[in-house]
Length: 186
Image 1 (cartoon, rainbow, N blue to C red):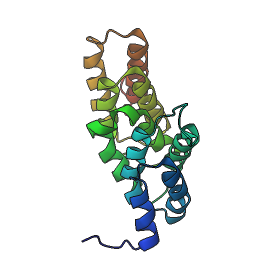
Image 2: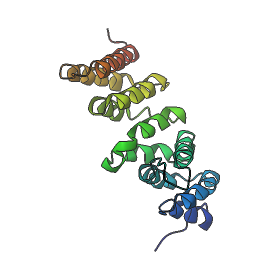
Image 3: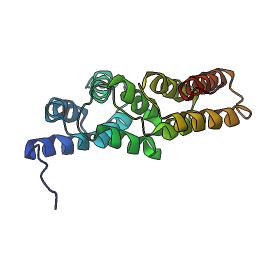
Image 4: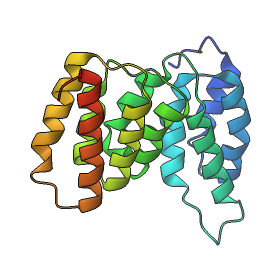
């Protein structure tokens, strides 16, 4: 049995519409999603984003659909949004859109000061473009706990020895430098 959210059955219907196979139905639901401000929509939005890659043969402008979903994610202010995005960041099904997930934290200005270890892990294991997004989150978070910053810098430095991609390595070095400054470690 589905429990109706405090936002009402209209929000529930809009969230359910995100799993529809017709991109036009999904596009229509986005206005209601934005209106409801319900963090429960985040995972369904990400699933829709992974399903509807722009396609020249579609009758619906899929680029418009994916841009609209990304914009919603980058402006999310719903209570519980950070927790939902942190959860999504770890799910393998969202690997193709992990950059969008990580970028949502800094675009939306979400406070993740207690989760530095997660961004360090993703920066180390992700592709260079994901490392770039993690660097942006780390640089733009107003406060990181000193102990977490010191531990993150040490973890990054340990990972540097095995990094073969020069671009990613440079970004990891930038992350380590930023975290050392935050921890006031020289």
